Amino acid sequence: MASSQPVKPPLATQASQAQRGSQPGLRYPSNGKTIYHRPLNRSRTQELSQSSFAYLFGEMVSYAQKRVTGIQDLEKRLNVQGHPIGLKLLDLLLYREPPRTQTRPLHIIALLQFITTILWRHLFSRPADALEKSSNPDTPEEYMISDNEPLVNQYISVPKEMNQLNCAAFVAGIVEGVCDGAGFPARVTAHSVGKGEEGELWPGKTVFLVKFEPEVVEREAYLGRS
Amino acid sequence: MSYYFAIIGTKDNPLFEYEFGTAKQGGDGIARFAEQARHMNQFIVHSSLDIVEEVQWGNGQMYLKCIDRFYNNYVSCFMTGGNVKFLLLHSPSQPATTNTSRASTSIGANPTSPQTEEAIKQFFTEVYENWVKTIMNPFYNVNAEVRSPVFRSRVAAAGKKYL
Amino acid sequence: MVVFALIIINKAGGLIYQRDFAEGLNKLSINDYLVLAGTFHGVHAITTRLNPLHQHNLPPSTSDVRPDPPSGIEVLETENFRLQCFSTLTGTKFLLFTEPQQPNVDKIVGRIYELYSDYVMKNPFYQLEMPVRCESFDRKLVQYVRPLNSR
Image (cartoon, rainbow over all chains, first blue to last red; front, side):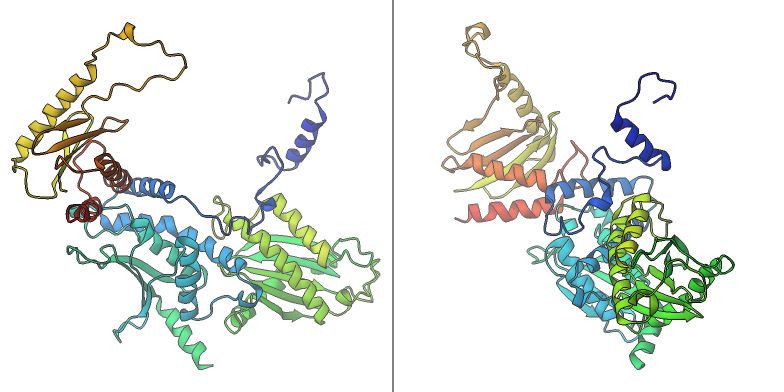
């Protein structure tokens, strides 16, 4: 509103101008409520329509597919889309924990338990189906989280020529975000383990391979000793 | 009692700073750091980051209590799940100085007393709630500076309420 | 009671899906299926225009609601099979071949449409109007139809 305007602007406009004046570029919603006015627990038990998620995720996959160089690149992009979600959920879910158990995970097992129970329940309304440590003695830094039927893949059929692809790479990105955020840098990848046989119980079974960086294992050994 | 509050990102980068004084017992809420020592606050807080790194793996609690002190400056720490540190430097006003706010409260007089610990914990908890709201903002990226005036006013309100 | 086969025809008359569930129909070559789909599409288009009543003889509609467009062929019955056609609002047609006595065919087609909209339309790798190649759709379809046939 120009200052040369002869008519005095109504009070409300003045107030909002004064508010805006201190922070140019920042616009408050018309009701004055910002994200800081919303209670964090309001949507705690709310659920989302799976259809709307399926359409959104479908578009995310299509988006990631644009000008992609290969399957690995596509999985990487899906992973990158999930990563910030993991970082954010880590703090949100810790915040929602009751004060007694509101602790930062300090050990790999505590972190993975947090992921397979609290994170999984928040995202998919059920815990993950299995959590295993790699039985190979050469790779003590590897852990596996299995999901028999990843929710994100429910409606997705990957074409034959892309059978390496698993769109749950997005979920792997979320898991990776949680691990990175908690100070356990890791690489997480999603692998389909269904054999594609007729009449298989879990044709979409997916294993998330969590590979922690060497320094995490080193610290774990050090913390275990003390 | 004067306070210097800083939020430090995962790469030891500052995300937010706020300086305030006690509002309890007739305090006016203005920080009274000595002018020649004021610039030291950032250094003191920065140097305590090393101690944070040691303490954070010994204890899974978010509130790590008072972890460091440098002369009359005490540093309390709160660690979020995402490895972001809230550091509060509190320095009781020196009796020798001619401060108007007579710091005779339990919080002001004794920076390591359980009451002070509890007050700081409540302050941190409230800031944490607002912090979670900040990071849930889809436009907020990890380790980005927090510029929201609403967040600043929320921190100020928490400081006023508990310290 | 037997459900013999399902054919899906896109809005341009192209065959996008064909699957047999039981023996009883002649096997056609893929070319013949395409011709069948195209022919049916044409016949269906003609039947939507056929109307025993003159337009101006229709009772004038009192409400603002537009009457449903003519649906064209819905059922084709012979001694040996029954063909149910379900046309979606977007013009995709589902043809279901069943035994003449099969009950609740419209329910079955409705359920198949549901599976299609879930496992085909929500699949990011499916290109609209192109042949349906979705493993999970095949799987769910067989899972649904097989128990109907074995009853």
